[in-house]
Amino acid sequence: MTVKITEKNRVETVQLSKVGGRNYSNFLRAVGAVVWKDLQAEFRSRELFTAMLVFSLLIILIFNFALDLDIQTRRSVTAGVLWSTFTFAGTIGLNRSMAIEKDRGCLDGLLLAPVDRSAIYFGKVLSNLAFMLIVEVIVLPIYSILYNTNLLQPGLLGVILLGSIGYVAVGTLLSTMSVQTRTRDILLPILLFPVVIPVVIAAVQASNGILTGAEASEIRPWINLLVAYNVIFLAVAFMLFDYVVEE
Amino acid sequence: MIQVRKLVKRFGLKTVLRGLDFEVQPGEFVALLGPNGAGKTTFLRILASLSRPSLGDVTVAGHRLPGEAAAVRARLGVVSHLPLLYGDLTAEENLRFYARMYNITNHETRITEVLEMVGLENRHRDLVRTYSRGMQQRLAIGRAVLHDPDVMLFDEPYTGLDQDASSMLDEVLKTVAAEGRTVVMTSHDLARAEDLATRFDILSRGVIAASASREQLRQSNLLSFYKEALAG
Image (cartoon, rainbow over all chains, first blue to last red; front, side, top):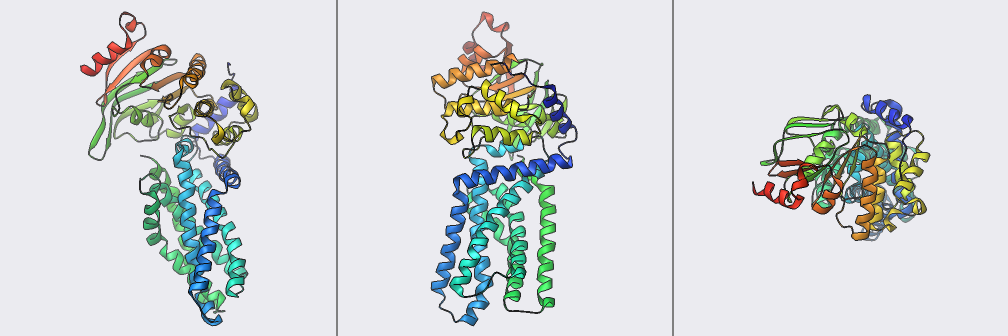
């Protein structure tokens, strides 16, 4: 029953604590551990992924049957329908991802680790982004078939990636806040949608420009806005996450 | 090992801890007792760096909070009434994840040791959600001792356990304490606290209302000491 602890274990842990978890490789190790844990748990349960995918497909089908449009009009509404789908499905994913952490006290387990807490944030961002991208990769070809529009264009895929990063960067921070309240399911969209409006507008405009064959000079400002938004909000979340999670 | 001076914790207008003083020597096992709402969980969350003190000085294992929180967390193990474990991972995967978070180098050996200690070596490949409440709590202790902490905090570890599971948890707790760790445990179960702890502190209305060592209690019993402390 007695457990012998090797001195090596103790030294490694204490050394980590002395640098406050800011050591680069330790930071990356913690990010990787959170991503690995989230992906492994999700691929086993498929709770979050299934909910996001089914919801996305339902939205696309509803739009397809509700909007009886000619091919030209369909093309012009594609970007809006697409980003509405990603935005709503993403909210479900973000809520569920943090609820899993909160319900069994796992968020406390994460926060008790002697690592820079922003590593937890970046780990959650990467796993949330992975779930969102997997759903998008499945939704795009189905949408292409239903709406008879080719969405598998490199430019559009790049915009979807940038928009998803911005959405998840803000959404992960806000879901960490909202999950600590009793009204977490309704609070997240109320907090998230106003903040994420610049991402959605820029992503819709850039996507629309690419789908309608607009000039690069018309699309570039929207791409620049997406990049700037991503950098700013990732930096803000990096600085704020420690305060957001602490009582 | 733990020094707390004039600790105040406020949540908005509500003051939960009102100038609390508390000290624990290395190797002591302190049972922190008190009625619901006395501030026991809030106090442990501050010691665990999960909550910031509003006022006062808190030092754990030679490091001040909240400034040196990462250093404190490296020396601290926490067990609460929630398991802090992922139901869709196996016991082994849960421990491997926490081993990576704590940067434990030879973690496979350590995981095997811990699973043996908590008596789950035969169920290490089962998903945690298939475990009974008692098994989850034993694994939670395994998670908490994985990085060999000097200080252990237990917040109502017996909540929701049946008699058999509680008895097994007793054995695991005794093993943890016998390794010379400093332990602070909150509990409503006076009999279990009396059996395990070397010191008994009563927390009432946000301060330590009374404190007695096992030797000092020999003339009395814990229940009457507890009632007197709350009445005073």
